[in-house]
Length: 78
Image (cartoon, rainbow, N blue to C red; front, side, top):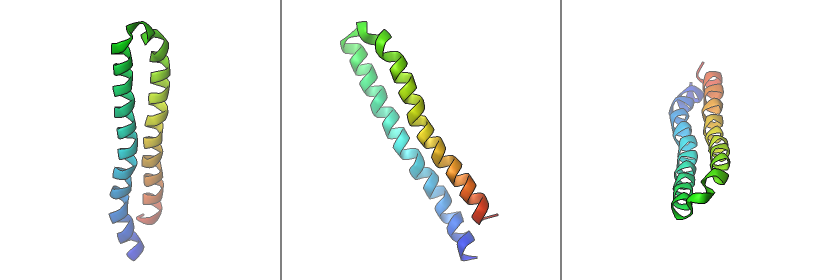
C-alpha cells in the first residue's frame, strides 16, 4: 500500500520535473535562434535546419520523462 501511495504522489511530480528541463532548453534555444537571425538575417537558411533538429532532440528528452513515468506508474499503481 505504501508503494502505491508513493507512486501516486511522486508520479505527477516526476512528470513536472521532466517537463521543466526541456521547456527551459527550448526557450533558451529559441531566444538564441531569433537573436542570431535578427543580427544576421543572411544566416537564417544555414541555421534553421540545425535549429529544428536540435529542437526535436530537446523535445525527445521531455517525452522520455513522460514515457518513463507511464511505464513506472503502471507497474506500481496498477
